[in-house]
Length: 184
Length: 341
Image (tube, rainbow over all chains, first blue to last red; front, side):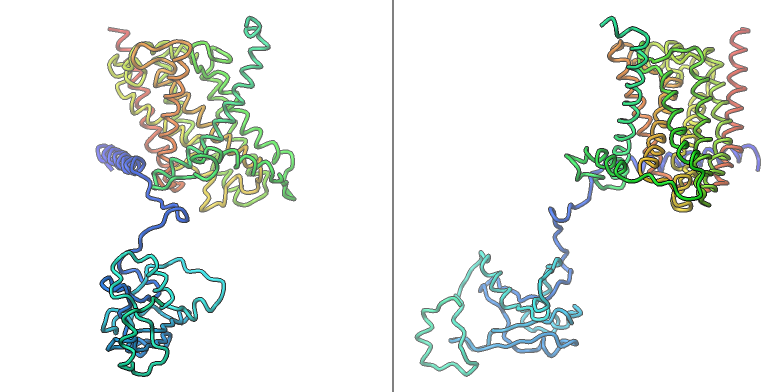
């Protein structure tokens, strides 16, 4: 190696060290990006897949689910159990029971894709803990929707009619009674 | 107040002061190091103990003190116990001659620089003894590394100091600082350029700084404690406060090295702007410059990865020694020429 090449190597090596130090100093003066987890939480991104949940229709304040059971059929791990009933004065069924067995769910999303009414979506819940297995093997999505409705600030029209006790077709005589419904 | 100037009282005060300074420095430089490392990696660093983590050194200290100091079977008991003391003592003695202010120096002796460099090598021997006495393969490898590394870096370090001595003409640290009075361009790091005693003095400083990093076993030259290869190097078998003392000594050595760099190149307790000097401002300027240099040491540690061992020796024997010899010859020639003309 010639003399000038040796000097050039030393010079370029030293310069590269200075560039490295400039980069770390740049990071040093930038703000800290740590999220102090239990005290601060991040908003989950739009495509995050938590367990599924029933969508609260922003127009009615109710679930859009008609208990068509397409999701139940689409599920490859048989972890969805839907039951529905016709509410009084409604032409289609609405969901009365929606159980998710989250212990076998693989979050594949087939149910969300299969739903023709966009009634289910992935929730953004990621810190799920519980004291019993049943909290996950029999996750009650209708109950969760009710909890959500309590904080719901949007329109509540029409108010939810009382669900019929039996899935039998609604008698026309009951229509008059449903004009003064109670929230379930 | 007169009794404070009595010699025994004065020595006692300096002794206590230096020990306290070294202890507090070691504790809080560890915190500063962890905080700066955190900031460089965009995280906050320790922030749970006390407001912003300022009690972290106390918590660490209690943790280390509570741990039992074990002497593993088969070790050389005396040397094993002696090594932490021998590694801690030299920087404490060195600080006795470091002038923090014009009058704030424990012992203003005429060969202060010589004392610092002669004691700087004891540190190496202590690490070697500690590694050897531990009866551990990793420690022995580390001890061998420490010796070859420090032998390699002692040479350019001393060549650099000789270069500085040609210009200063004295070994008294306070006298070296007095020569740099005035504005910041009177400091040695800039004065060499315009007085034509050593135009390459910034290079001299860089060599000094690199050698100081290597002598104090700091990353990227922390071959003694290469935790990814040698567990903890010479400290592998040490636990509790035995390990803590090694750690404190490392930071004490950094303080000594940065103080020396401040004295030799940055005008010690001299103010950079000509005014605001005196018994109060002097030590503040000194500490400010010293801590700025310590910040650079920490900054370097968290920027560069550890070098390989032959890379480390190549840097010294192939680059630093020739360069420092060249600056020494250049400086000598220029000083002789200016005297002749």
